[in-house]
Image (cartoon, rainbow, N blue to C red; front, side, top):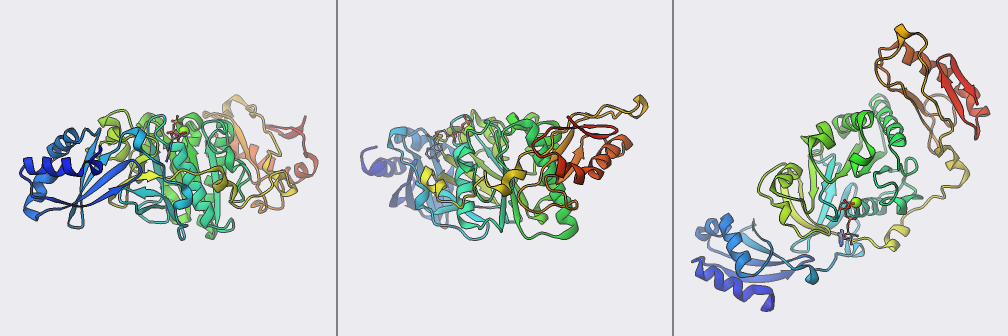
Length: 423
Ligand SMILES: Nc1ncnc2c1ncn2[C@@H]1O[C@H](COP(=O)(O)OP(=O)(O)OP(=O)(O)O)[C@@H](O)[C@H]1O
Ligand SMILES: [Mg+2]
């Protein structure tokens, strides 16, 4: 695109099409060149017709051209070829305020923020095919949020479906509510804890935000864990709990109920086809399958649709965040103090009809909610709550918890119907 990124060719093509428009500015973005057009209002409709975008893309030899109406002007966004792209460095983003968290820049270079404290966007879905930039986007969001928010005002729960690949740089972040979760079993326990947090907040109020971030949801959440996540997205908004979830496919078989409405903010990179674009963004015609990948994304939230280049963090950006030494004494309780085996049914007639696993969610840092029981925050079963058996296992565990906390240091404990016994 030699002639001032196509401005001359663009003007010529518009004249050929009979549109009276003048290029007033050309703005070089990260993955795009945006031509700002002054155009008489009578010609705007013709200019914004879908066929015009196709015609201009052809004339400019561009893979994708998008036309947008912005405060009386028409913006012609021309996607640059891969070699001409340049990233948005994280360091170039200003720190945000409150929960309004800068994540990148739009095609005119303006900062784009994701604000999970906004009533319209309490939870977000990040979607795109492999290489679209989902993990980078989550990393940027976490880095940006942790940079602007003190650990006593924000807790983060990070679940990494890539086995630690994505969130390893955050392993000693001071904001962590518990260590980065990297396997499915821990994920169930962690989200059970977060669900208990919902109940605690509903009963006693809250002063500290909790943001749950899940990369590659389908590799780490299923069954009960997914149900916990659904509960948090359904109830979290007024209780200061938000969820950000990434997935390659936004289909119902991956996301369950979440696919429809519970993740209202959408950050969508390159997807496979028009149908996947509609599924991910919730509306047709935004053509995420024509994006160029690598953090070139469409952000839909609070009624607005914005093309954004997500900023790219460098290791120094993450290293500059508040850290906490995970090997220090107070973090010892982050490791599971107890490992509870599956309970054996007491009597066939009382056997639970649901899965029998008992999870122990362990206390993190300070703050034990159920009496002075270091190492135990909650014990939750997957049995039906009406099932007396499940309740007895839990009660037995709690009644012996104080004893366990003294005696179980570093040892495995098995839970059986009759109570708990040391191995
Ligand atoms: N915002 C960005 N700016 C610059 N480059 C980016 C950006 N996002 C992604 N990339 C490039 O694309 C590569 C893939 O990004 P990322 O790992 O985030 O993709 P993904 O969507 O998580 O893919 P997968 O589904 O395979 O995990 C990165 O290693 C980086 O080189
Ligand atoms: Mg990824």
